[in-house]
Length: 263
Image (tube, rainbow, N blue to C red; front, side):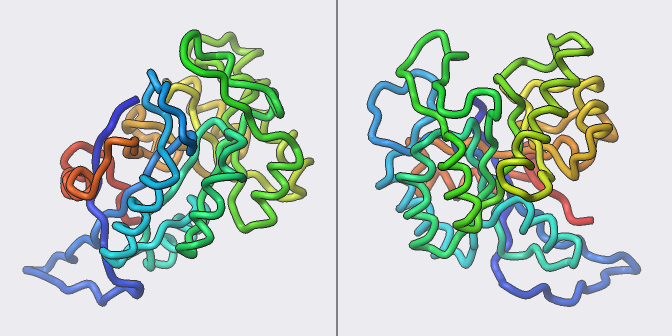
């Protein structure tokens, strides 16, 4: 996974945008954090696990800098109003069951929300797309409903964690469209977001997500030119990310293209 950066604003309310030499000053860019599993798992060859204690300290760092973690839905709604300042998007890929048992209590403690990208074709299964590393349990239908009832956004990660850039047209369509339909039936809500498995995307994948009716899609780095909100960049956050590293990632976010620009 890639660990990169983005600049994060601080106040809760947007300030009037000052004009300098006839130009509006851009609002500070916000950033989106990419998490996966939250557990005490020392065997972590793919750097996808954050311990509960580290997550607690990372959220404390956000709060200490005047930042609030929010779901992508909440972040994009705020951005549309020009009120995204002071927010950081929180996303959890793959939909591990420890999101409900371990991450959710920490989110509640800080008053944060998050987006969970779920594999609706592997509900209650394991991360068997990983050739190495420990087996981790995935959310089942009950877990998804618990997360949704707790105010978290449920979004799609496809059906089975397929690299969409290598999928044929039929499989690409099924992964993008059927996964959305299944989650909507579980939650009873419209599914607005998609996340590209492995962070891999190309113009075909972006077009499929667009035609399926998603509002946004998350990647790692920016996608093909013109992708806009269908390839939102994120910053990978892992166990090694202490306060110093978080500050560095925050400052370098715009430099390395991990910022979510204002609209």
